[in-house]
Image 1 (cartoon, rainbow, N blue to C red):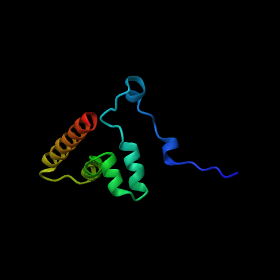
Image 2: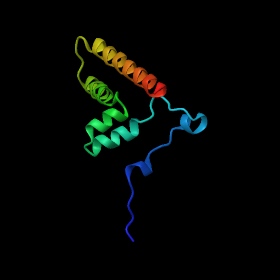
Image 3: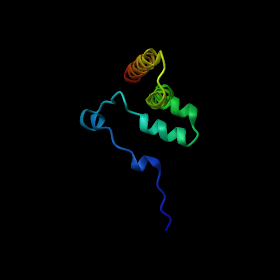
Length: 97
């Protein structure tokens, strides 16, 4: 007997979706990361459009812990605002379609 499991078997369920039946702003991020690790980059973007800018933000935040420079706050805030905009706009598009 061969046991096969997929990454989806270990993902956390969305509590908001279970309780209220509505997706939350973060729905799809786990599956999107899973798709990136599987090499499905376009599918990952379609699943959660903010995935690449979130990865960029996390990498910048980690880098900024070790290396400080003059305009790091402006870059950080710009990336945060960009991510919030992408997440909100993609969520509105998802719930209206």
